[in-house]
Image (cartoon, rainbow, N blue to C red; front, side, top):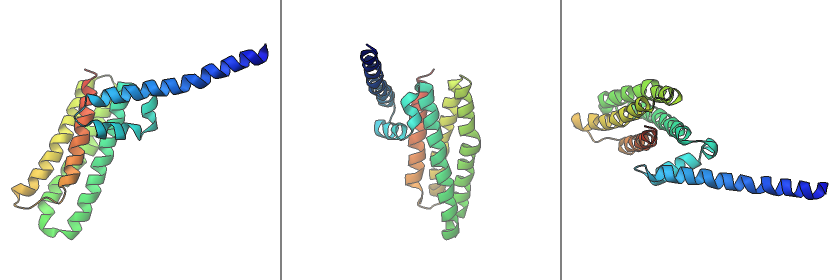
Length: 171
């Protein structure tokens, strides 16, 4: 009888984990379907193990964190261009300042707002991030130059807009 009870117990727990993971995958997929970039959303969330046990707020936090990573990478890339393209220094300086604002203000305020149950302020932080990426791009054309960071700016803008869409689900 003990063996039979043990088998039932194990079978219930072995089958429960895949069902939970499948349910979490469904939350991720349904959440990502409501964003402007399903594939970006899905790949970003699935690459983070915390997404499998999170709710929509947690998914928003993961995406805000991914936005921080992209903005930090942008700063590093801008610094490398600064050395090799002195003719672009003015625009690159503007971009670096914009992305520093993202990393030092927009992302931390979004995280704090999500942690504090105030998603509207988190949405504002991600909206600001997208605007900063657009402004960085414009700084080159305003200076009469072709932007060497178009792909990077678009990447930051896209991930911020995905984060924003997820956060809006909490409003």
